[in-house]
Image (cartoon, rainbow, N blue to C red; front, side, top):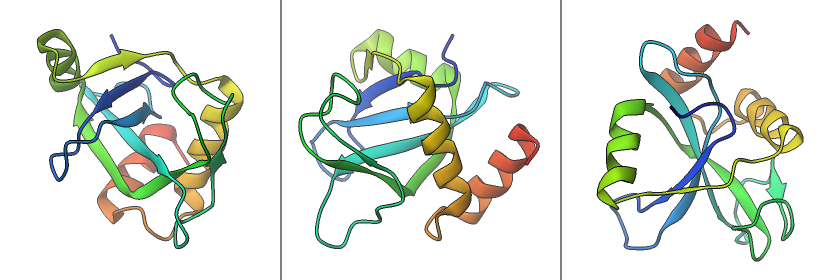
Length: 124
């Protein structure tokens, strides 16, 4: 079962590029909050910047794109992994997980439903 800090690769449906997603909550009633990692661009939100070496997948400066944060069903993620539509990767370190979780609270771009759900699960 997926848990806090676990990661997986999948496309977001808008393009065919695979992005690294990080699970940032423990499962609650079969759901988790996930955030996406993307290449840092000129206008990227930079609350959490990650660099090569922070995770084996990261090859260049990247950021957490909080605007793409989602509440997902654990079963859907695990089903996608089993079917090959997603690939499980190495978990992030505890330090990175804490930074990413704190960033979700600070970001102005997190969808309100995701922020509310995160706060209720994490008792913020």
